Image 1 (spheres, chains in turn blue, brown):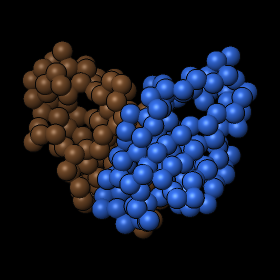
Image 2: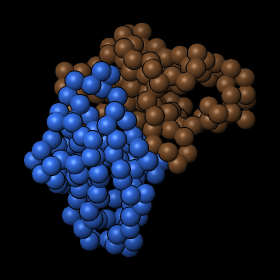
Image 3: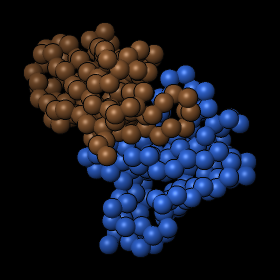
Image 4: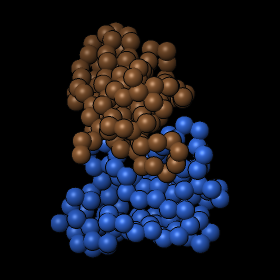
Length: 112
Length: 116
């Protein structure tokens, strides 16, 4: 499984934008980039995914570098509820068991 | 609608006892996954079902761990002769189908297992 690298922790202020980086220099041409987040005492929650083009949904935006070796999850206005561990995960289109391979993720702290 | 439901929410057992953890996936979801999450770590894959077929059990740490999904809906993860290192949060996830691997996985809130 392709490896991703994320900072261990980041801090933000409420109502400010947050940019969460992820490096995936060994990504293959067919790997999709997925983001999940895990709030305290809850299971992980799907956030967004993309292949090459930038993606937007109601939760966040995903900016993917042109060479696809890195990506950034963007929370446009952080709220206290966005405090969570954010995981960047690569998934191939024909993955054998569809399993998710989690790293340690980035722990986001949001200050009021 | 109802999400993935796991029970019990918390389980305390003495070392050597057997435990059974239940997962009710989202209705109609074909794929079901079990993950184990140690404190401070990301979840780690245990096993995967497509309907009632267990297609991947490569993550099960030992033969004390057994999972089943006999009718293709509810799943049970059983751990026999529990050890202290089995203490973790056990997460269940389901997804709609295997046809598209980019189907998001929907997670339950897990069962926190503590072995004394």
